[in-house]
Image (tube, rainbow, N blue to C red):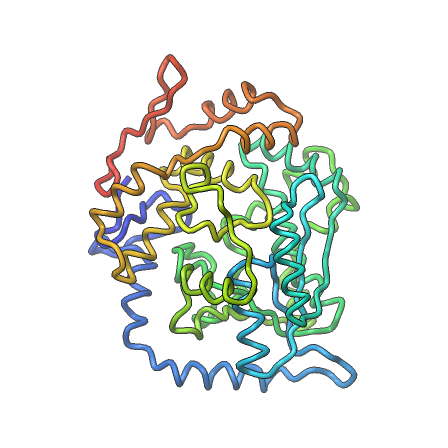
Length: 375
């Protein structure tokens, strides 16, 4: 395990490759941003919109995948209020047992701001069974639900005959998932190759689910994209001030409701991520034990690049909070999956990356690595 020389990105992030001088893709991208002609990028965006006009009889110019959170709220307002186009917002709704009141309020806020919203809601029992099987197979109950999340947007685009889809950040440039890089910095049609989507449906079929059960989880194939002339565009590529904190501040000023539960429970320094449900902090904890980094690492990396915190100060924050956890959230997560908390920890400890962590006889888990240094 090695860390980026500039931030705290570890090389254990799936699909990331450091440069020969030990710098992660996200830091290299941020450095390149300092020389960008943002006016030129704005012109490129305008040309993209002009090249994808709405069809006769259509009301919407494009589609945005939304949760009601900071990024989707910022995107929707920017496209409508800055560019004067009319987006259709598409939201994959969590089942009633999972969605938070905060999440419902934030989606309602988008509607109250004047946007048309289409809500997709996969069958709740299939959703729950898939989450249970995902945890059993991979110690990752989000493997299936993220498939549905990403699939819902192009599925709706095809049904509505809308060719242009806006997504937020480019995971290849801004996070380092290099398999998602497209033909240009804003081209999102390679999103299908990201770590989340690349697992496909085979494991679900192997668990006994039929293709009819999995309609909501099927990401359209490349030939479907080509047939319907779909284009995903990363809007974050065009915005010089695109960042976690800036998007949150902009969205809070427009009615976004944020978390108040605290970083020690969620690993969320500012309380502005995963607002629509409370199982994600549990998943982030599991990710930490698999890859050696959690939500806090992602936060401080951006803050380091923006010059708002030193690498040394960030190390202390990561050491303190990257394994953040809350017993209530873990218990709620277990109750939803129909397992005991003891079964949860048994499975998690069996999945711990033994290269990075030691599981002691008393059940405690300790990192072998030093944050910022590695193994």
